[in-house]
Length: 220
Image 1 (cartoon, helix red, strand yellow):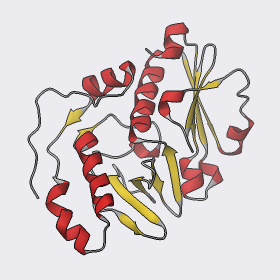
Image 2 (image 1 turned 120 degrees about the vertical axis):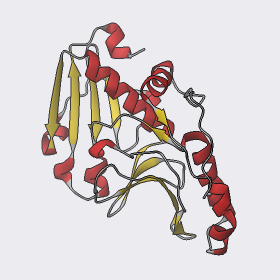
Image 3 (image 1 turned 135 degrees about the horizontal axis):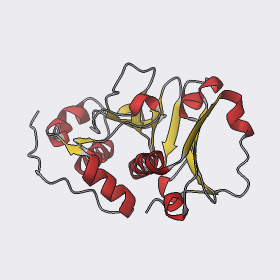
Image 4 (image 1 turned 30 degrees about the horizontal axis):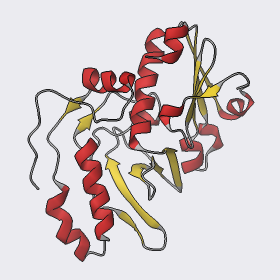
């Protein structure tokens, strides 16, 4: 296992919004990462398709070694974004581990067959359509948590009763199981991943960030 050198200046991957770029570069830390290439032949000998090894390498090149502030949910998210040996089968598809949990959890963080970022517990729950979407959601949560006048958390069945009339989905988070919604003076984060991935409806949670001005609602 060979560690790659780390630049003293963290540069966010291309393609993120300005808000997420600033978040990554201001609050992220880059640590030495393992090189996936050194495992390629061994993984392929163990039946991992070459295309899946290439997916793991691409994830590692873009995100490997990045440490970000904790997520408000999922016990903070991965400690370090870090690819490992793909898991799955030709019939079910392949998932790539995306980094170890910060605490002992009943699921792992994975990159799905379609590049989705999600959690795999008793079943697969794709949270965002890509890792970019996950990072965008972290950046938006950090922004909203800083500027909101009020933060209200709703759990369980009450989440399904939320009135989202007048709200629009926030596209940059690429929400699937999870999503963000933008209103006139508030932002709402819906966390459904644990409810789906663990078949546990009681784990539904919504965070309502209220009292935001026009700039606060957009978040940059």
